[in-house]
Structures are given as C-alpha cells and as structure tokens.
Length: 281
Image 1: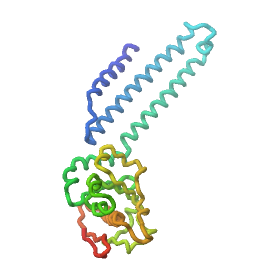
Image 2 (image 1 turned 90 degrees about the vertical axis):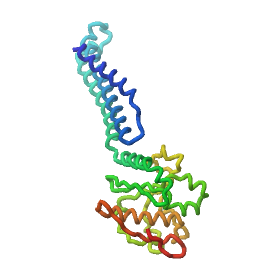
Image 3 (image 1 turned 135 degrees about the vertical axis):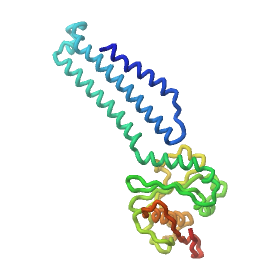
Image 4 (image 1 turned 30 degrees about the vertical axis):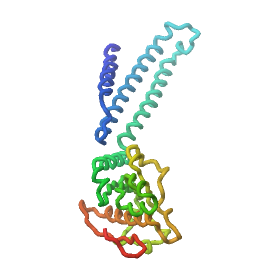
C-alpha cells in the first residue's frame, strides 16, 4: 500500500512541472484559469503533505513503543493512537479550511470578478477610450445592488480643467463612481439642476480619479483615496463644477439601471453652467 501511495507524490511532481510552464496572462479568462491551476496544485500538495503525515504518525504511534525506551511514556501510553489520530485530524481540518477559504474568495468574490471585467474591457477599448470626444461608461451591478461605473474622462474634462492644469488632466485615465443600492433605486428626473436638490439630499457617491500611470495596478477595493460626493458642496447650496457633473452622471446612471430593457435610449438635460441653460445629453 505504501508503494501504491507514492503515485500521488509522483503526480504532484508532474503537475508542478506543468504549472511552472504556465503564464499568468493578461486577460480575465487567462488570469482565472491560472488561479484555478494554482489552487488545484496547492490542494494536491496539501493532500500529499497531510496524507504523508498521517502515514508517518500511524507508524510512530503503533510501532514507536518498540524502538524507544520506557522513559518515553507517551509512546507506551495505550491512548497514543487516539492522540495521534485526533492531532492529525485537527491539523488536516485547519490546513484544508485555510485553503478552502482562499479558493472561495478567488472563485466566488463577485466584486473582484466584476472589477477585473471592468479593467479588461477598458484595456480592450483603450484607443477609443482615450481619444473619443464622446463619453464611454462601463457599469456593473454587484449582487449587493451597488453599481460600480468606470467613466472615460471626456465628460468631466471641463470641470477637471477648471480645477487642475491641462497637463495633469491629460494624464487622467478614468473616473470611478460607486453608487449604493439605495441611490440606484431613487427616482430620477430627466433634468439635473443643483437648484432642485437640497444639500442634505445629495446622493452618496464614492468618487475616484485614476491616472494613466496608476491604472494597471489600481485596486478598486482600496477606499483610502475615495471622496464622498456629499462633501463637494460649497457655500451651502452651490456645487463646484465637478460636483455638478458627478450629480448629472449619477442621475443618468440611475435612470439607465432602473430600466429592464436590453437597450435603452433616453435624453437627459443638465444645468452645468451659471447661465442656467441646460445641456442635452
């Protein structure tokens, strides 16, 4: 039986050699396939370790008393076999649980999967994304109901130019907006105007500006550099230019997500300037 068991060690060696030839890739599908292979190899290695430990401990607990002196009382204790089995059972459960939890988060974390999809879509559309004067938004609804949207900077460019220099604006790759489920469900009209909404009723939106140099390694789960939209109010009832555009885009996103249609075309007016005249989108 021991000779038969060694096959698992040989198979682990073969799989490890094959895994070393794999590359992580750049697309979401390639990364997920790589992660699955890595977790599979880790599980195989864990089985080798645990089963080898169980085999060794079996011989130690059952035959150890034949080769050690009486002073080693534990090996001569009738309960030695039970203690060995309980110990190995506990070790196996702890190690397997740690691996199962890691596999669960790798395979079923819908937030990370959604964010990886957003990043891949943005990379495949990078040429259009960077050069188009039209606004492109990729929006994903999570299981929790919240909506993460990655928006090309063209819609926010006039507001960004008014707050930072144009050279810095050209280095911006995307704007990320995070809407909570309650905000998506609120009824929105076809006109966005700061005069129609009280400061205390502003939607709660997480806002993040991502530069080109940081986009490849961006972590959308990191909230250390996220602004809260209701902190953009200025002078009590007046929004700054960036706040106006965030509010307008939030209204448009909410209207789009409230529809169950596969395709939806609608017009939206937004008052973005001091002259009070609406801009049609």
